[in-house]
Length: 357
Image (cartoon, rainbow, N blue to C red; front, side, top):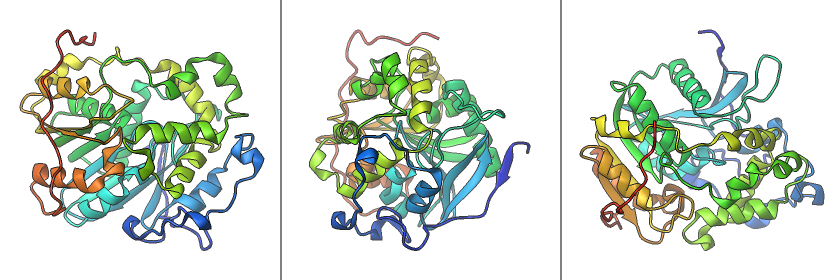
């Protein structure tokens, strides 16, 4: 297929910085004392982290790359059995699924990837080298091409935030290709952008951020997505910071954010889905209103729903054992023996704004 070049698998180089995984994610040592200090220029975001450095530090055992739409797309394809595709959210990476994937791969083939312009992948680029704008049509082309490259014709999709939108949109467009659907704090309904994302609607921020963006802002944004910010370790914070400071990422985000219009997707088509669906949500999500969880559950016929007290926008990273318990029950396989700490979602709020086509 034109534009697709499978590449050899990669793994962390010897001596890689802390945060690189040489084995399973669950065995990684989180030793904040071992983190090398960042220079003042690095901390202020005056410099960018090169793609080569990100590849050395943050590829894992099983990491692979495939050339798609002008980028070397980082992904991990592990395990065997029915296929699960996990898709992360805005400014995150495949690492957010580490603990969940470690368990699921014992019963499934689990594919996870770094969406452009995030993670090790970074921005897509045109034939002239210009950074592509990541809007919904571009993500559609990208995810279709990626799955074709890996030979995936049918799968279970698990998506968080932006990845949830990409997942349910894929289910709408490829109805026979999605076996089951899990939406975790998913985007899709009209909403005001979170403050840390909405900053990039300012022309001044878009112009200045590729040359100056202090890491303290990124750290604050990451803490904001956790229900309990005390759960975030130093290695995880460093990973988010270095990915955001990755070469070309801030410029790509500056092009992407002004195109984010959550009134654009036709959510009315959710009522026509026949795929078994599970909606999972953190009750302390500060990025997407919890009312959206109930609306997804109401519109998708037969959807099951779980609300996690105390958890934030990325519950699969903040409390993977709780998410795994509900995935086990939904998928019907022995992927975790943890007990679920969950509660049923409330009924949808009256007067919820419906998305236009």
